[in-house]
Image 1: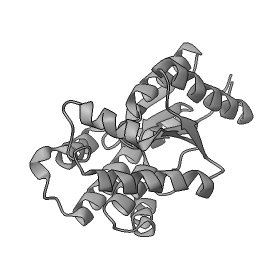
Image 2 (image 1 turned 45 degrees about the vertical axis):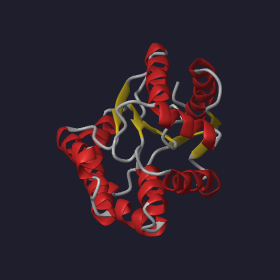
Image 3 (image 1 turned 90 degrees about the vertical axis):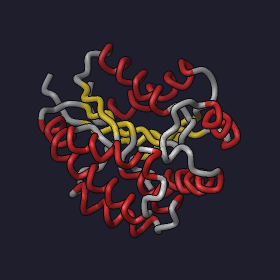
Image 4 (image 1 turned 30 degrees about the horizontal axis):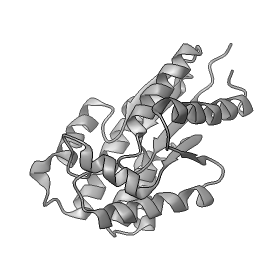
Length: 213
């Protein structure tokens, strides 16, 4: 079988279980025989991970929103160059925990910088490298809020107020209609195993459609 690249991202507001689902999907794909590059944002490469620390540290609560947006884009540009493009060129499936859509939701809507403006910054950063499929995990906002409240070790973004996260949530919910070619919303309620099965079914169908078996 000739390896064929496929870029897959998982998105969603804080509290929907996205990182858990990314890990479970990685296990399922590798168990199925796929070569998978598992990565995350912000971060994913040495330089980008240093930027991640700056972005998420609670010592930087007074960071300017525009500076935040630019740092996310800078980390993403480095990540694309160092990790994502090489993995795709090697014919791997790239599985990324967050990507451009998070910046549009968090900085564009959450920080009120404008979704189009943040999208333009990131279009420059990624130079055309977009996911083939994006899974958007969704759940009742109150349930996600309860998970955030119960979480320990929250980062700077997770500690933002509920109004911020409501703007983020509404931005995410608009995206599937605007990106029907690549984004699929998946219900994130239920046990992790139940959600993982829903996610894998969507991914499996899309891989089959792309003739990646």
